[in-house]
Figure (cartoon, helix red, strand yellow):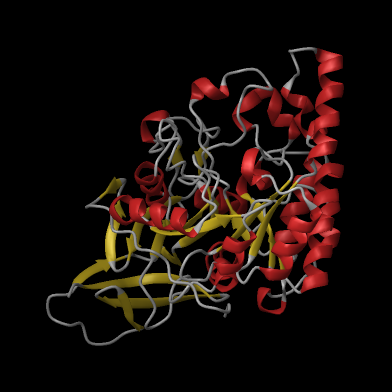
Length: 446
């Protein structure tokens, strides 16, 4: 059984930063603090660098099965590990969509041999698969994903009785994409009338508007309150929606909110420079919305920070407004972006750990991960808050090979990622074979 000692590190955990040694035996943290060093232990002197629980990204699209020309579980989980992300929860909009327990089992089988990070999967809800939604347990999925409008095919849930059945009968947390399609379709029609085929990207936040988001998210909250559903609303983008949520610790909430790093980073002024590269749904909106989201994270109104990592090829993204798909690749640099927001005074280290590690673990009941505790699995990220990292194409690990952050210099850097007690990323290099494990979920959050 391997033994590893991380010494002279600054451990960020559960609202505190403290100098402490971490002794890891096998895949678990055996001791926090000083003590005897067992014979044969590998000792790494961190020289004051910061040790965080590995990031848990509760919303990614790794595109497998069915869209592996864009990405795959192997490629995107390697990128995650390089960014200090040790666990991810993957969305069901695959080809075919993952809307059954057999589909979940098939995805787990793929990940079991190819994932470099730990994994969990959502079951997709439809207008007609309520029997699968009712039957799904923590042994099958992390949660139920509901596209409340703004999707296509089977994954669009727009029937009132279907929504009521999902919210009233799902045993797992319900995670929602909230945009109201009829408003979007009407706005698209107006844009075509005004601009023809040359709709500018600057119209995106008006087509996928604040009103379309609020209409849908307020419906989700109303349904959750009516039925006592454990509701998690994904990727908030507007200041108006914040009125639907309350401040406070996640343990006291049945209705929670997530924001994605790009909605904390970009605003609508960036469309002129980046165009369809930052086209995403829901849309990046006004600077006032971005600033309100940042404040809501700091005020504990928003509970989780994630990525909605959604890669497409650059050729696909280079098409015109209506043909360019929505989504952008971010999982390799999400922690770096959060650390940059810290440098600019918007977040603290403790808040980053709370929103991107502790709270996802609490919300989904992830067993023995998300915290630095004796007896917990040793999933860790070591970061240097003084090192710079310039984002260039040759350093990207995404299969799509591009990032909207190219040319940006981040003023912090992930030095090392430890997964289940094994060093899997160090000094820019990923080591070994895929070591990711299926996440275990408990019936109730911490």
